[in-house]
Image (tube, rainbow, N blue to C red; front, side, top):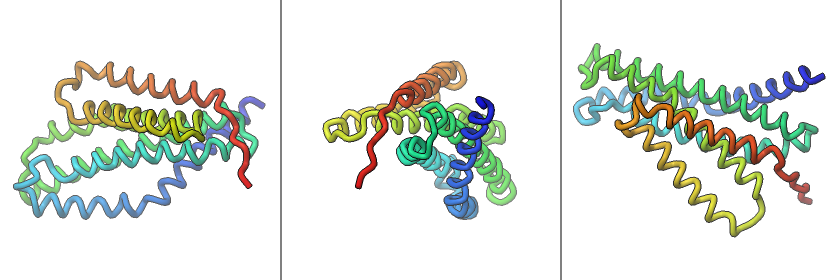
Length: 221
């Protein structure tokens, strides 16, 4: 019985991810040619490559979509008969799949852009530097995802009070600065990578603990 319930939670998590991928697939697909065209046209201006900018924007999508999914799915899942644990597992599976897909998209884009510039314009960065940049997102992307999940859990746990909006905004700002520090800062990689892993783990723990006893919101007429 426990195995069946676990499988149901996992299937729901996969379904949440495939729905998000289906809804945004054309935005992702269109992002490749548009970004590569910008890289070629402004190769002498954007020395880091346009895909680095696209990758950074993509991290915000990961964070925001993670938080929104917690907001929309958790209470709906409880209304469908899921336990809090099952809903949390589903959201965790969704977050893991979203992070993995985002990491793959960023890495493919960085490597493809480098190959294109090498063939046409000549990049300002080496293949090794490109690979190192891609490897940073193995930590950066889950960090953004965990931040989104944690903030979504905060909103679900303490939903309904206007006075709580300001603390939530402050927490969002602090986490955004922390995520960007790890994304752009040169000081931490790789020696401070454990600190980033610890922050992601702490945010994941906050997400789980807050949803463990989150109140069930009554249905509105």
